[in-house]
Length: 171
Image 1 (cartoon, one colour):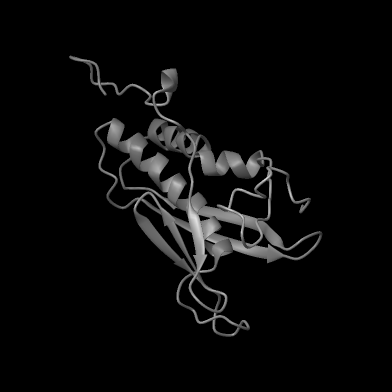
Image 2 (image 1 turned 45 degrees about the vertical axis):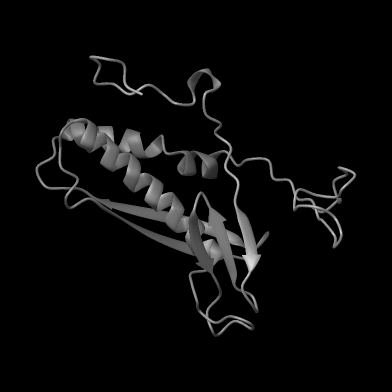
């Protein structure tokens, strides 16, 4: 969607041409495992075999949440470099998390260590840090979204919620 003669790409979400809404379906694959289908891709989630019902068929959803933040950081850093004609070879993001159970079960600490390609200037290093901080996954952790849960019982259509449109009061 670049303008003719322009090297800059236009934002596809501008003027309402594309929807920024994502939708995925997560279904059971037996015991506590699940399969997520999103835009033609499939992801398998499970728990370690040491957890009741876990068969270690894939990473846990909480681990994928952490990895998603790091992958977003990697993308924004790589895009910054690519946009300036600098190779991202050597760019890596390592993520470490610590889980907590109080006040609720959650990630209590998430640390990302970004390894940069050799030879970058201080200006590029500062630009990469700004780029990473503009990652939507990072922003979502800093400013949590509203979360809504609705429950559909057997016989109701879809997983959007009760057939009459009422929220199920789960929170």
